Image 1 (cartoon, rainbow, N blue to C red):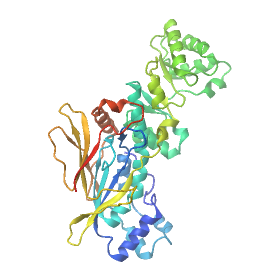
Image 2 (image 1 turned 90 degrees about the horizontal axis):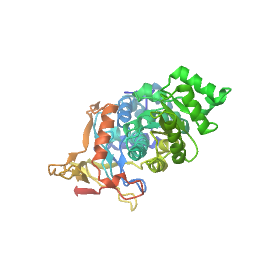
Image 3 (image 1 turned 90 degrees about the vertical axis):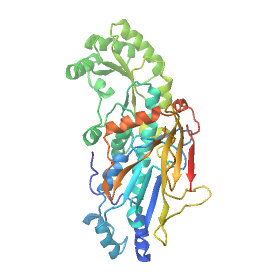
Image 4 (image 1 turned 30 degrees about the vertical axis):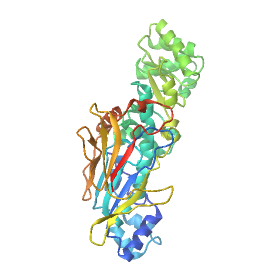
Length: 432
């Protein structure tokens, strides 16, 4: 797993620490509490979302320590007593959550954190930051890989976002089915496969297009992908096959009406005997553009800007709310925010995916204070992530990819529609 560089303890908001300071003075900081990270709704028009960032969040939680440098930064933010408490801070509570790659719906209790108020509230900003970003990317990526219908998608959006966000985006896209990334830090940190060949600048560097193709093939072999839209596409395809032979791996198109151009290029490649040469397309693709190319002779997609910006929804709108706290007798008492447009549902949650006998998802069932009854075909959704402060729920990226594929496959066929719509299955609350 990739480690967070330095302590993530200051990747938080000022008021998290001042709340704890005030609660400690009031004698309430040690009350046992349950916090929940959840979405009130899906982004407009989306039919489902995808949980990602679980592994990154667990890495960050494990490294969440206030070292000397962090404490020095907090001089003047909190008092000396609070600084002393922060110096020995360790999260010792429990965390449950949806597995990485799981599909989520409105009100899904994606993360349930139980511990003292002081310990648990400090995790709010960090957990929201990781989950909101990574899940937005994975949710967009899932729609793209679904639209691709088995054709590989490559993440290539590093230059369109913050350098660290680019690494997280590559990881999240891989969870949701992307085959590779252009980002080498994602390869080093998380083991995401990488791919890439050459840009237009490489062609423009050389005296002729043929010289550029020859240099690339000499270096990378005939299995490489040649970019053929720098000048004239038809002439470039002719030169590409002339230089590499009919065993050329692929050609890439990055401009024009991709569907029309791909058909022309496919016909030309076949006429030249390069029947096995693949066609890869790029150029500001999103899930709708990918779906529109379903009937075109396209073999793969490179996706950049739209992926790393969540294809119009760069955040999931997750919130982190206190849903239960210790009462006078030591029992957990449900609590909830009741503002008109920002309500929450009090009480500790458990959840399962209600499925038909055939295994098709029918509802997200959320039990308040008790687990919903399983009718025999249902699947529990919350798994242990942290127990008494120790991380117990890590999975590999391969496991997360497989989990996403299986979870998405359970959804009704309406999930495959790219048009705006309501959540593909309803959410039901029971008990409370």
